[in-house]
Length: 126
Image: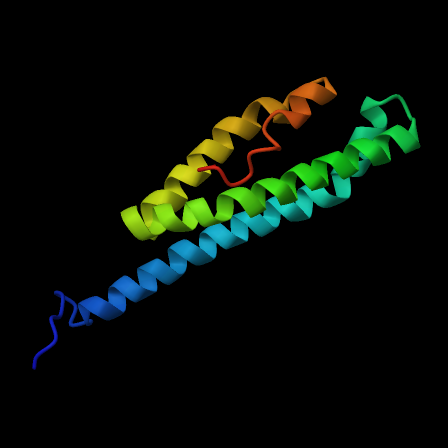
């Protein structure tokens, strides 16, 4: 049985696997960069938004973490089901577009409620 090759002589299946790997690697890299920027900055940002009240900031930060974990628990299986139905790449692209649209207003927001608005939906086709 002969395998299909493209014009350069590379096997087509091999090229697809490499493209899939690069796509998934870039997606994970962007997620980790976002986490690496957010985790050190968010606690101080919340303290600043609540006027220096550390106890209130800790409560709000805990609510952010709880909302994030709960949404992961609820929507990760849904996103997996969507990936099974439509394919991994379209679901990840839809997810990234939704995430960009949801977080863009928060990037420039001067108030804590606007900062929190995109946070409860981390996975829902984000």
